[in-house]
Image (tube, rainbow, N blue to C red):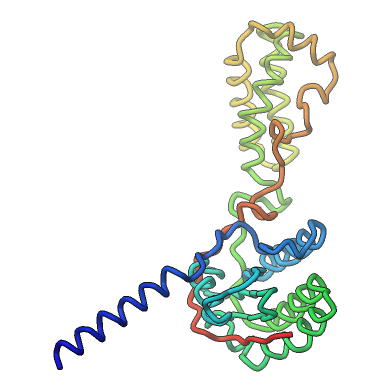
Length: 299
């Protein structure tokens, strides 16, 4: 009897291990909308991404959408729950996340709801979103329309839930100025401007003009004389450290034209000036806590 039990346990462990190795790995979380099927075009995906981003910034709740060909060998509910808990969609201290999974070849869809939002989106409501907003459009091949309609209905339901307000970015004054932008300006733009102005006005007057101009810009942007004074001093020091060699040629290259000082209009060399919130680079809030709430459907 003991030998039979040991053999049975070993068999079960082998089956469980084989199953675990065969399930699909969790995709890397890189955006709010991840389409691994090529169903959405760039315009559709970007529009949906921006809608979810704007909602997250306003309400704090994270909604993510994933399109895959199949979830096999798992059923879509198990797969969605595994992905949702791995991605930890939602805020860490709130746990307000929603994951929408579409298995295109399986013709199945799942809305996975974190525990905090099960009052706003109970299972019956999630099923209603699927049946009313998604599957009728999916049958017509309108996946972008179905996902947008689902996003609108989910957002409407979550808006009625009394959740903590999203944390505001720190170091931002009432005018909406970001001091991180000021730091970028000081340590990247000011040395370039200082080099040019040294070549034009000389080694003494050029740094003074650079420091004074930096202070005036900081005062205009922040309305703080203290910040302006610090920025002006930093601008003066950076202009002095920018060195003299090559100043003349830099000045000649600028041709006294403002745009020549900052080629590319603040964008990095060949890169995008958009933040990580605009798609690639998106990360979860560390929420997780998906207990299986939600609903599934097919079309």
